[in-house]
Amino acid sequence: MREREQRVVASVLKFLSILFQIVKNFKQMKPITTISASVFLIIFLALFPSCKMSSEKKEKSTDVELQALFSLMQGSFNSEKQALADSTYYNISLHMYPIWEKKGNWLYVEQAMNAMQDKPYRQRIYELKRNENGQLASYVYAIPADSLWIGKWKTPQAFDSLSVGQLMLRTGCEVLLNKTSEGLFEGKTQDATCESSLRGASYAMSTVRISVKGIESWDQGFDSDGKQVWGATQGGYIFDKLE
Image 1 (cartoon, rainbow, N blue to C red):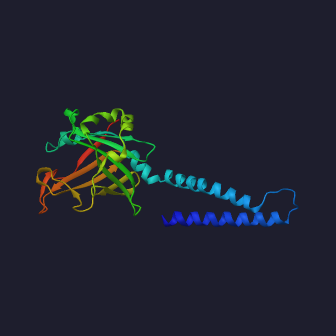
Image 2 (cartoon, helix red, strand yellow):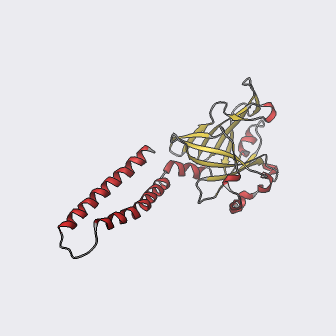
Image 3 (cartoon, one colour):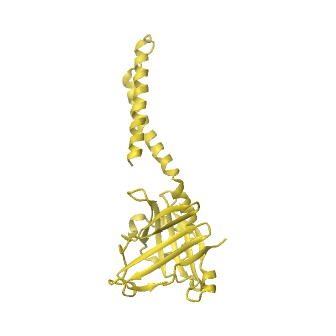
């Protein structure tokens, strides 16, 4: 944020310097027009807000890492290969599709047993953005009356009837991510900040790896003593991206 402010201030000073030079030169000219320095000031005040907005919009659209992460997370995935290789893992389907494209980087997420996709066990909306420290973060929201949205990943425009204000932010459950190499992002939730009451848990933790091949996600629930009470024990689920 400081760097953006410094660039804005520098732009303002440069513009004022140019304006001053124009006014100085204007005073040396013959009075062939009635335009005054005040007119230049009015023009500046009218144009500066739009220039600033254009600059901020451009800066937002050029966050290459954020857009790369957002792109990698989109699509349909499943863990069929992992389930066939290791019977302790289930074949899980995972659908993640963009919604509200004009509002930022939002994804509708639906997860279910692959053979029972009409009965998902998890429905969420993710928002991808940078947090106050500038780090990539995936914020998690619960959806009211989530059963109404089953299968709507096929028609993302359906979410236009749902507003951001209706969502419930799962505080402390955001996943903080870093780009660790080209085409690879890794991250996790913070320690014991994501509350969970599932199967006697006190909190949940998630670790993820996101690449062009797919998503590896390890979700675990722990009780107040730090004992794991749900989730895979040997490692995360490997969701291969489907063509």
